[in-house]
Length: 468
RNA sequence: GGCGCGGUGGCAGAGUGGUCAUGCAGCGGACUGCAACUCCGUUAACGCCGGUUCGAUUCCGACCCGCGCCUCCA
Image (tube, rainbow, N blue to C red):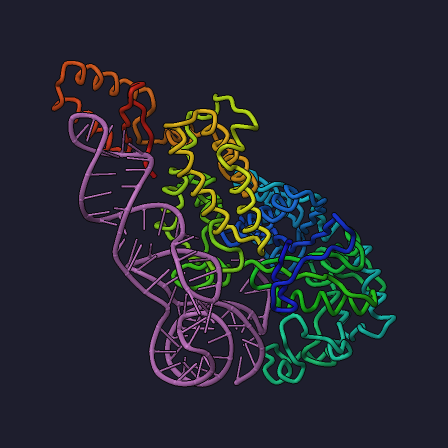
């Protein structure tokens, strides 16, 4: 039984879809004015793991993640760069897709862009005005009348009075109340804009998600997800817009990923303490980055550090050392039954069913590695079956799909010994060993070790890998 | 100030009212020319103070500490 922690109810509850076997999920995506950082990567990986797992269990998942391609920051950045908004956003969308591909994040089924849904946005704002939940102001903006929506604040337990007194938002003369937020922004000189019943302008931030989710998934859908800084005000405002306009529940389950931290502070644009995905991919194998993010429960914080990345690398090495060389062996269903594959698989699924507990699921995978290493000595077919299942289950988290030998050897990087030089030194060492010249063979091993290359002698000869 | 989340062995990180998390590191052993990989064994923890209970790291309350949101941010 799948259990999901729901931000709305603040507890874990059994998941019940609107339509049996089917899941409609909307996740807030990226505002594309800059390269994605590791915090963005976390949200991408988190919902990618969730989608992969649900599909592996037979759910039919329709995964929508939007792209915000017009807003203040985009306009400012495009001006700074002397390019159009569209040039900037297309560049950043391409970069985002490159980053996702590197991290083995599968594309959502739909990636709606705000600028492609202006008509739907205008229609939604019109409905809100008709229903008296919004008003055009003297300055050309259209605002949402927050105090008209009785349930405002139900996602994050805010109450209107507290918000009003604690409001840090500067009083805007055009608004009826400081809590009101903008649905449609009147154009300023030099900005991109679209015609509307309230004059030329562009959508506010929150309205696009209400419009696009309605367009792609309908008035009510199953899961709405996003990053840790979105519950308030963004998701609160989405609820207010959609439920007021549609007259029915918006999303049934709200899921929020935890933050990535640096030195105990949240990684964020405003703190300027972020590392972009491409920075980090320059130093670590993409799978290491993915594992770094996926080995912690999705709702917990993660501390970003070189040590954490290295630890993820070392953990993956254990998997790949064990899997290495197992691909070629045959096995039957009986072989798999004999080594209790289904018990492990059940425990893996039970962990994932419990609010997507990846740390626990990974621990099951490690138990399987231990079993595999033992089976290598007793049952070739049993070991092959185990190895196959480890890779299969790892694949659900988006891991363990590389060729083990390739992962362990790594790419030849600038300034490091390349593979052919390593092979040549190994041949010299083998010759030295053959004549029992251990001083020489140890010397060669030390030379390689000094460059991070570790040798492994076995009956079949000497193999090597690069340590993390 | 309001609303939330969290404090687990040297580190990372799950979980449970009374037997093992898991990985790294450490220690002892096996394998090895020596290593590496691997295997076997092993050490060690639940912020603080009360309460409930036969028994609490796990439930309840207070306290201390850390973090997030309340302004654009995933």
